[in-house]
Image 1: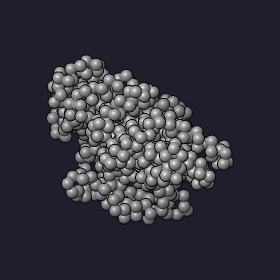
Image 2: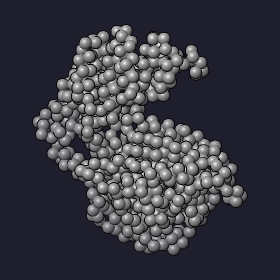
Image 3: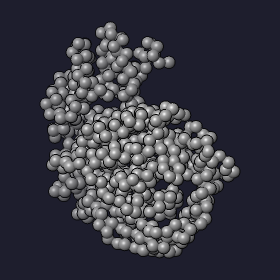
Length: 638
């Protein structure tokens, strides 16, 4: 049994499933007579199918009516991410947008259910997916289209996509070339990796700060290097792409945009002139950015799909783009950003993060029909995938609802998690009793079990999480990470004895993070000497600044409790110098400064405490309340 699991895990890890659907020549009036469906396993074509689609004039008519409704609704709504010119369509008489969109979806779904298409393409696709795990299998569907106008159709209405929740339809041009990238030495990642440039354009009637906060919360701090620029001039924006030595892995734009059948514009500022840019204007900067590692361009603005078409027409080999195929209200744009970056922070593949974020928008359908189908992922099939840096923080498992942390250098992709979680949760206890007989498999299987434990930990399923942490430690006795995660779980469950025992096991296996955390447990029990020994061990072996900062902060905590205020202040300042966004260090330093009669200096750190704390973490919630109390006394908050 374990041998079969090992083979399947190995297969998923080194294999990706994808389908490429080429529409070929044709249009809605004449149909598409020469459609090809291609199944690839590990990027090697295994099967190829043929099919066709009949003429669909009713789809063309309903699409035209729906687009007119979108423009009419948005032309009078300043709280959307579109700039509509006075000559725009404003006299549309459609009274029931929801009905029109339902009709469009129905005729689109019926068209894609036609016999010649289902028999030749979809039936074969379904057979392949079912053979590889069915609805639990993650896979991409690339839709190669020659005419970019057909990108605007609601392809999400395809029943195939509806039935398989772990796939996404990715728009792709029919002709493309792989981007040339700057050479690396020894397989090192490009310097652009983990760098995100966030551009806030014309924000009239919009609250773009919400977008920035969502991105910062998900990928900021220890994860990625974020840079925000607000309402830049065209020259400044182009300079950011041309002259930054490291450049960017992700370029994000939020604000107003506009497009017509010929080209699209980004409204990057609110000046009277020089307030828009086109893809042509940014072409040189984008080319340089792509060469230096730009992998994803996100245009969170209305009808920006035309800009994707402009990029393709300009011959720019950008690996992937996320754009909007219709006008999008501001509140829905906020929601999409929050979900998208949240799922990316959990290491979902890009296509799956987009799918999940779109599914989250379904709650808006009654208010804005078609909301969940507005975002579009455009990507070249040559793109190998977006890989963000691993999280470097004090603890690999944080409070329920927060982002998962480091998994000790091994982070199985989402395909493994879905398949193994579905299988192993049914076998849980039984696997633990047999695992000891298969110790040779431990180094491979233990990280998988640990990952499943982390996922269930995050989902607030402590019994399942504990089972898999124990399983991971059982099948690989030298693996420190599951002991650490188990200690954090026990700590959340107020099991002090279990937390201390598990953390001691993690320390014995040489995990510096565990030394930082066990010192905290000792401090809570007023065992300061034992805590200091753990801190010294941590500082001796820790490599990451975040871990060092946690250890020094804990030493300052001891000195604060022992009323050694000067030494405590030095420790907290040092910890903040290593990691400015440590809410506990900010909180303790503010308390020290208050005690030393420096309320004005403390004020700055109370504000930092609120900025970086998360109410979901009990200790940080206490810091938040203390900060609010002191700020309220000083008249800084109501």
